[in-house]
Image (cartoon, rainbow, N blue to C red):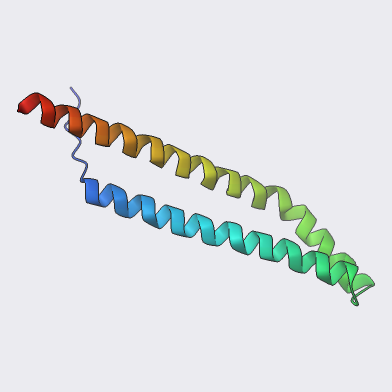
Length: 97
């Protein structure tokens, strides 16, 4: 038999806010990194250091983007789950009146 799961709406909101803040920060920093790599490799820095930096970034770029996608999915999931939880609480409150 499954146990009861207690979900505090404030804790859910705090978790969602923390996820949104961290996700936005990560995505903003990823965009900044991409822009810096582009500036460095297409600007005054040429040769082996620029090529090495670009190659290292490109080798990890898939992982960076996959993480950004995972963050987007988690944010979407949290939004869906918060909506379901809020609806369930509203339905319970209405049913108890």
